[in-house]
Length: 137
Figure 1 (cartoon, rainbow, N blue to C red):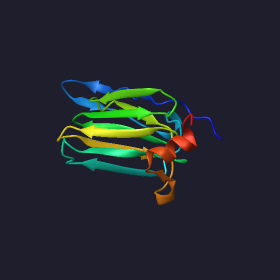
Figure 2: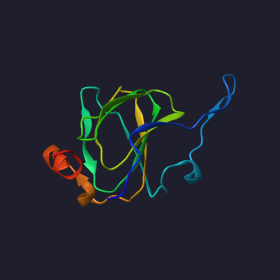
Figure 3: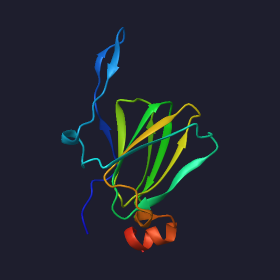
Figure 4: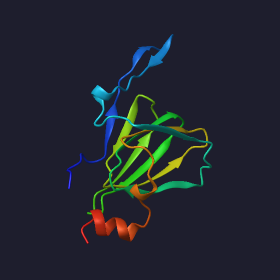
């Protein structure tokens, strides 16, 4: 089984100044994987919790382009983390071996960089199955 980095914040930095605006850059050379898929979510009601899954293989980087996203991760071994994304120059890295949920402010737009194209069988949507595969069960 491949060893993955734990969930962590990636700081892309920002170029510019407050009077002209900012630019942040993500390139394959400064990412932990090559990007094969990009998708985004938006207009998610604040009462909705999304995610509730892990992956067999896909790694992801989540960016709050606008608004705020609260990302909770669980590696099945007792390591639970909460990340608050509210700065578009920062992102959170999610390895496949992490159960994750996201809750959004209504204005949040989430951009996701993924290491693999969409494959339904890559998703682990049952928490007990996740624990059997990746956890300490």
